[in-house]
Length: 214
Image (cartoon, rainbow, N blue to C red):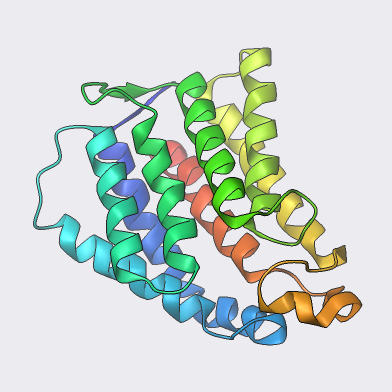
């Protein structure tokens, strides 16, 4: 059983994320139209499409180089708060790893996502429980931490992470929004799932799907 992710895996993960987001862009925008600007799906989909096209023109020597490129390109091409928030998700993952590292194990992945979570909370000012992507990502990071302590193999750990991320996502339905445009709705935002938390779940789901495939 494969217990690591390599450069080719990460390339496939980015391609799969683009596909999943593209398939769900209307759904994401529909979620966003209830308590946001209504353009989240189109915006994030365009960012990944542009990134995939530019990836075809480059040769990457390491996982770190690939992830830093994805993060920087996302921030350069996507406006508003979506570009920086989701850009740093990938950028910080890349920054945690040495440029010559060829394989990523479970502990590496935990560190990568933890760093991204901390950066996103810092720049966005959001904490768990405030109806944002942080709720999905925080649940995923906690799950990975538990898997590291339990010495789970990577495939099992990613399945658990996926399940935890989904629970984090679903928990946003019962939260009062305190960030972004949705904060103006106050109590009226209860009952609606956060679009950013949903797209974050789609991104995380690609990791377990690639490992199962390979």
